[in-house]
Length: 323
Image (cartoon, rainbow, N blue to C red; front, side, top):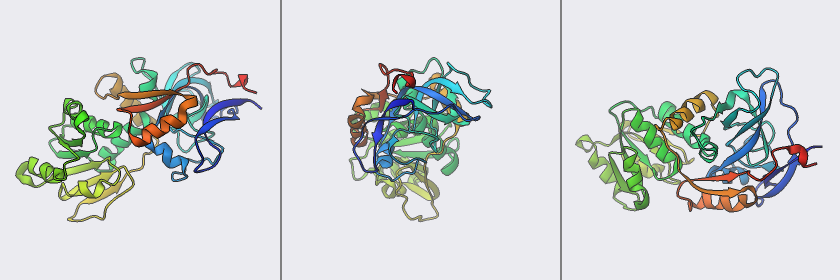
């Protein structure tokens, strides 16, 4: 049996370690096999590690739910991609193993081409935060031109992409971020940035809006922060939270709890915007596959000022080398 190197767990709740797992079989008719160049690491991978997010597979499990790489093989029904194409994907539910591995199986419909202008590391860490921010602003809390919108936690990767997307759609964005991120978020087009360490920040946000009535829409990207963000929303507005902590609705405010959904077509549009400079993503730290445990710890604690990425450079791209 052909084997591949991976990083993941042998039981839910177990420590992240290097694994040797079965390499993918030839792809099904609708699938592609991707030789992974780099994979994203996020706090959502910790949720998978402890068994809190069902990604479609059980241990022994390569973690990781987003990656960029080169198509190695395509199924017989796949006409949109060919071996050698550079791609990125968020391929849930998993068909084989997670993205922290030499090879990744994905339905072709969930794969987007990687523009040449987008580096591997940025592409690897883009899919989950970009799709999450887009789905929050499109489906759960649709933002309209001229509307006032709050992004609570704009200093994080997903929060910053939400700011950029909302500004591009014509919203007047106010945001919360730490002092080290404030200038960057203002550079993204935010009208005002408030320090979330200030306990009065919800009042400051409301006071910044016309007549002090509050924002029409809020997106919460801070764990445990949704109830506080709700205080800034005008009566009858919308709140979307991406951290699994939706508060009870009040004052006619619609509350939505967002879990990212795989979508190859939207990912293609979003990564095109990244290539065109309409969106940006900063990679704060890169690690080799062998240091996946350290990478995950850094992503969970937020030590990296930007996205965290595992690189698979230096590992054979041929799974047949590991028998």
